[in-house]
Image (cartoon, rainbow, N blue to C red; front, top):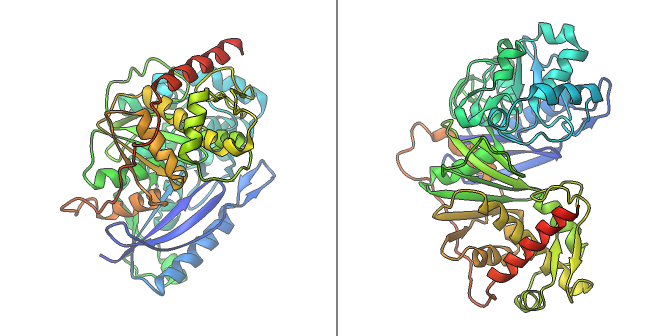
Length: 462
């Protein structure tokens, strides 16, 4: 098998990777994911992005024999499409819809079991985007052929084949009841089933690259276009492909996102941060998420690292705490948005602030894990693991649990690339991780209990 091209679409930036069939990333380029203010609303520049993608594929093709192309993306992007392309611009999910759309959406979205996530701000849910388009652009909506999540939009543009895909729809689209592996009831109630194309697996080949793009890129006509995948599910898949199970993955960045293959969550009960995604085979993946990266930045206040062991001891012994929430999101503690504060003897010490931020982030990660069924292994990856103390602190907060730190900074792209060999792989994909050192850190059990009590008291007061 030749190289795999992975198109990774983030909210702020996009990346194009070349990877080996076993997921080793060979090279990549990146560019801003440009947003236009309008009209008709703030939207992504799909035409400019397509030019960048095709030029990038042509460039990669001069150094690698590209065998397949696969897209992965966050879960809040979707495109209304016609016969060959976008029927309406792709909404920037941070764009607020008109107030009446928000009000109407609250009445149609259904129970937590139906939606699998909280009702979030802006247009973070594909169903809310569809409602807005249907109400304000009825002619274009009526003539559209499909509404596609971002990975499937790019698969459609490259292959000409429209498909639905479970990991993308299970990621807060509110179009898919993940816990029951079926479309949400609002799809039929709204008459939107006609816009939901047949479901295909993330690893399936939809078709070859369209002839016009073969000519544009110079890639071979038989280049396979895979259906594509949600970014968090792609990252989880790289562990599945390596043979790991009984597993929770904690991915860190702007968001701390926890996903597990363990069952046992009651999806009739909604809790702050709780979500339900799906893996590549459509199985429910309970999850938790909170804006840990944003919170860390507001606690650290620009102070430089690294975190150090001595300061951890001083913070714990003196009972200095960062109490949620510092950003505009309640996170795991309802009613605490922008109410975050510091208490304890080192609260005003700038030299302790970075280490306090890392400790706070580790506590948030542990709090997310506490709401999920326990797994034998917890794997940490993403931006936070660049700071060694984060992995050590999470491990110290989880005595008796095997904790692994994965330093691959591009796990989403690695997992997406591995999809190309899903149907032919005969053994585990390569995987390298380490267990963080727990020795030398203080016992965090009572500190964690006190932090949790104080945080819940903040919730009550707020």
